[in-house]
Amino acid sequence: MTFQDLNLNTPLYNALDDLGFTTPTPIQEQAFNVVSSGKDVVGIAQTGTGKTFAYMLPILKQLKFSKQDNPRILILVPTRELVVQVVDEIEKLAKYINTRVLGVYGGTNINTQKQQVAQGLDILVATPGRLYDLAVSRVLQLRSIQKLVIDEVDVMLDLGFRHQLINIFDILPERRQNIMFSATMTQDVDELINDFFILPERVSIAVSGTPLENIQQERYSVPNFYTKVNLLNALLQDKERFNKVIIFVALKKMADRLFEALDQTFSEESCVIHSNKTQNYRLRSIEQFRNGDNRILVATDVMARGLDIDNVSHVINFDTPEFPENYIHRIGRTGRAERQGHAILFSTEKELDALKRIEQLMQMDIPLNDFPEEVEVSNDLLEEERIKVKERNNPLKLKAEDIPGPAFHEKKAKNKKENLGGSYRREIAKKYKKPKTRGDKNANKKNKRRK
Ligand code: AMP
Image (cartoon, rainbow, N blue to C red; front, side, top):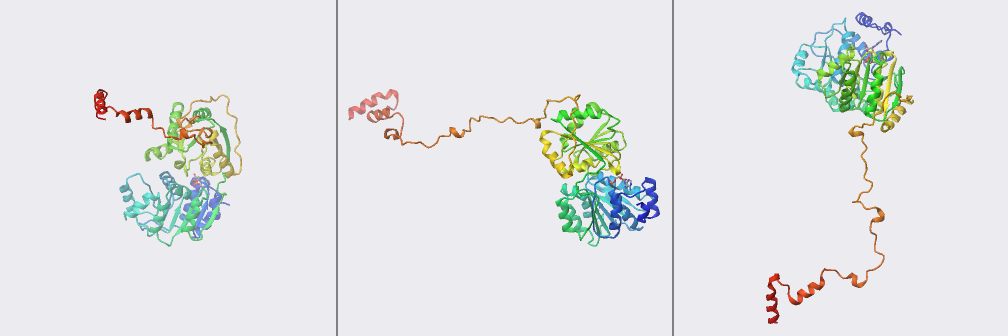
């Protein structure tokens, strides 16, 4: 199948020619007619499969020129980086079409965005929070929205945007087409679909959770953080092979730590993104990585989901994701648009359960590599890696055999008496009266005499 079979129009063909794209990807092929039909659509496709164009091709084909100011197409994405990326993709595809595209996201001056909205637009790409703020401020009118696209729905729900999405549904016109894309089908996604969508058509190019076949996967068993750093350093020495590498870690703190550790050897070549970095820092990091200034990008899951960066040679999973879906998302950053990719996974013993879950989801085992002899195994441990030594003999806690059991015979009569202590003295004191003070012996004598 070629793009000619989709019956597009000249401006779109010209844009596709400029991009050098000749054949639609499977999701583009499958989604085209369904999206064109105007029905609600749920698409399951990983990032990197061409899903942005899968919804944009039919939308742009149908979008008529208009002078009205209010947007007609609304595209919601979970992160600011994705807003920038999707706007970029649309602009490439709409190069020869007279459409106004605007991207809005939080963390930047809302007034600037209000002015941009006020100038009029056709397609709005937004993160949910900022979209809502703009709508509430009334600068942005949503009554002309004909199509709502929610991209990366699973991430959106993972980030806790369900409530915000529902608020947005409330202020959108009821008669609209809903188009959703998700890399995985999760229970949350399923619930959202059942609650808010009317008999959506489903298009799916891969069973949820199946990794792209053109990613070569391998793994290493590594005992701890610092040994992982050593192994990583050794691998990254091969600059030719490892020419564009994303290293994933689950936590921001770890991302910073790893970035610092790498900085000693690869300071000119590495950058980092996570949600505690400023917007400008994040965009700069991605740009530097995308254009090749930096060879190595350290990223957390949330930040890098959905990022489309060409020619990523390797994805290195510095830790083993707890949720197998995250692994699928991570490795989907390499081997994009049908190019060969490589994914490497590091697992400690503690992470073996997570590895099992990943292998179960993929229904395949990830081949294990021998740990390279030349890489030093470190005995240094991070605070959180140190096993807390449990006190074996807790003096405060008696063992079962030490706990006194019930007495097995009755006490003898004399032992039953309550011991009040010093009975002899008490008897004497009763007899002679206790001297009030030591020097008061005379008082006792006087008492005696009175008797
Ligand atoms: P996406 O899944 O939308 O993030 O797209 C992944 C990458 O594939 C993007 O860089 C697109 O520009 C590219 N792409 C989209 N459609 C095609 C196509 N038909 N042929 C080749 N590359 C494509």
